[in-house]
Image 1 (cartoon, rainbow, N blue to C red):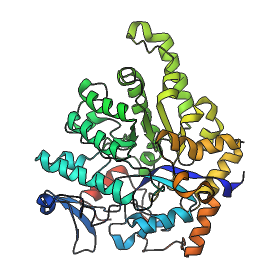
Image 2: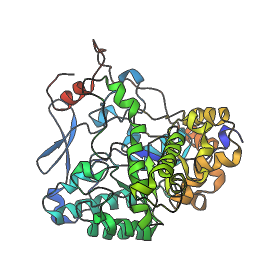
Image 3: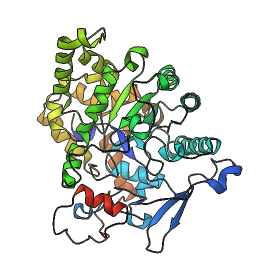
Image 4: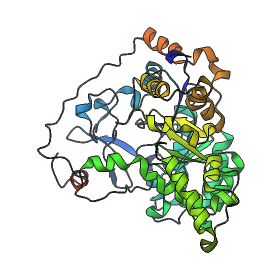
Length: 432
């Protein structure tokens, strides 16, 4: 195998929702209540809903911009690459990057539908949520068959309603849902509560993987509000260790033996020691703590937890401490951690350095994701048309331009940006 023979399926990308997403998907009685995109006097685009202003329309949608312009911008569609929000141009960008398949997490509704969950009228909230899911499954994913893995939003304000929605989207072919890594932080019952059982059961029955994306608790673990922002960015992937521990020691995996979770954008390099530690804890403390998992925690993790990485050479070198059948790859387009448009080159470098054999490369790059998420692009497109080389040839023929485009870089800060600075800017208390 060489680089061009790889088949890449990304289980973590992001969509910047287009202005017309509710058209044709929301019943007419609710259209005047739907979120709307408006252009502000300063030229920024924002969503408005229920009196709320939702800024940073393209938070971290920086694909195609010079790295020295990265930040929480852009704040308008004019500053974004079209592939962030236009489905046809997204396919162009995927082809240019040699990426066959993509699973796209939401932007303005937040990772687990918090925006709609805050709606007082729950009939309206459900109408908005279902319209979003229908747009995502039927239009975003359905426009180009074989290129996307559908990902649904839950209805977290009511586990019974949530279960009903899972069965509805499953009938449409969706086998993934985005959920909170720590719902207690959002004011809902924790992962340890029986409250979520109807939701877990529906996901288990329908073969839906529950994807816990970093930051999906709307709270990032920080050391200090005065710490440089680099501290938060560095720790983001590893912070999902908290969700991993919560899951392993919760009743959920015991009560629902067919239910699987994915640690989205969590990386894999930290996992071997985590597994060593939880096994040590189990052997030393299970009697007095009352835990009986029926197997080692590391074995339970290997059986039920899907792992995901963007660029993780240490993780690849230590891959045999994980379940090779549960490792998946991510591109993270169009966020600032994304490897677009050179994902194949960076991934290939890590695979070769770790001396990963072809059979394992196939598992990591596509066959695991295809099995786990019930995704079958080959039957639609033909395997020969799905390789990095074949897709890039399509992009070349279409004249897809991946050169960087500057939208003007802000002056460098006098001192390193701190977490508190970023929070104040978001609240409008400090000029950028």
